[in-house]
Image (cartoon, rainbow, N blue to C red; front, side, top):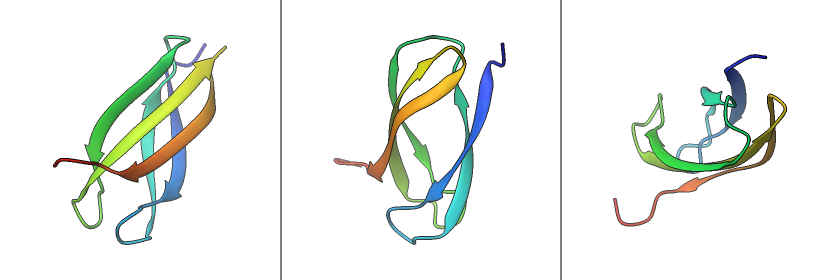
Length: 65
């Protein structure tokens, strides 16, 4: 099983299409903040993973940063 999966999505700040590697080695919900590779603003990422696949992915502006 792969431990990381590449996910492509639009940045909620600059709307550029970016990609990030998501850890799917744990079948559980994960939430963390990572900066956009284009505009450097903080993005709150949350997703569920199951059997090495990403489910219910969400990327939004990080609150309180």
